[in-house]
Amino acid sequence: MTTPPPALLIAGHGTRDEAGAEAFRDFVRELGRRHPELPVAGGFIELSPPPLGEAVSELVERGATRFAAVPLMLVSAGHAKGDIPAALSRERDRHPGISYTYGRPLGPHPALLDVLERRLDEVLGSAGRSPADRADVTVLLVGRGSTDPDANAEVHKAARLLWEGRGYAGVETAFVSLAAPDVPGGLDRCVRLGARRIVVLPYFLFTGILPERVRQQAEGWAAAHPEADVRCADVIGPEPELLDLVMERYREAVAGDVRMNCDACVYRIALPGFEDKVGMAQQPHFHPDDDGHHHGHHHGGHAHAH
Image 1 (cartoon, rainbow, N blue to C red):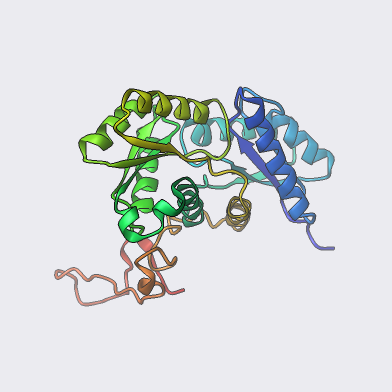
Image 2: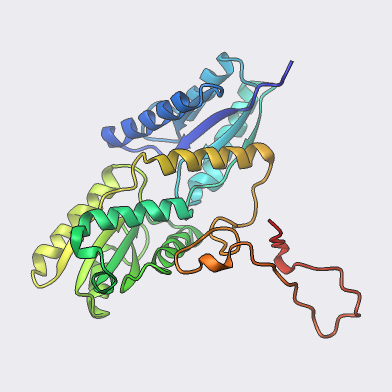
């Protein structure tokens, strides 16, 4: 008798936007269709049905006792760091005998950066194809915004990784709530840096109140600055890359392999412009004061013998 694989529990933020909530529910259904071997369910922390607890109950009714929970979130802020673990521990009290592991947030994974690049290409059309065209484009990546500085820093990290090797003039960062700069402030900054063409790129998975606000604020700013060429790109959406990435996070959580950040490591992943580094042997650094007994310390634990 083989042990059934742990159930996949998808945790979402929740949104007051019905289309956004439905996009999440659709996404969870699609994951379930793609992986008939797995019990899959999803719920929200707040604002929209079904609540996370209902998803857990549904999986328990289907016979699941072990879960791997994956936050359907780009960035680890208060929700991923506190609210989801708290909700899960409440569910464990409610359903004695269940156990769970908890996966990492999704961003800034190279697969998602590729989708973001596609969103930029769509909005630029033929005008964004050549290196000279791209060198004219400044991207304003707009995150949700948080009171958690670490979460805001993650959006900057995504912006930097999107810029590396892709040839845009720059990728600036702004936030739609709780953190500066806001969208108009971010656009002002792009102009001060000499931007000629700006694409506002929402760093959001699905449609919702906040991505809509990003678009409205960008359009409002553009109307007041007719001399600037401003376009708005689409959200990431339920792309195959996103479905695959959730399963990658599931597998990490099941294997207990929630590693240091190797997603964007040039020695593992072919990033634009750095393809030659993949698989390169890593030499440990020896401190000159070492006693000569070299035990092959990989500082940072990043042993890249793949």
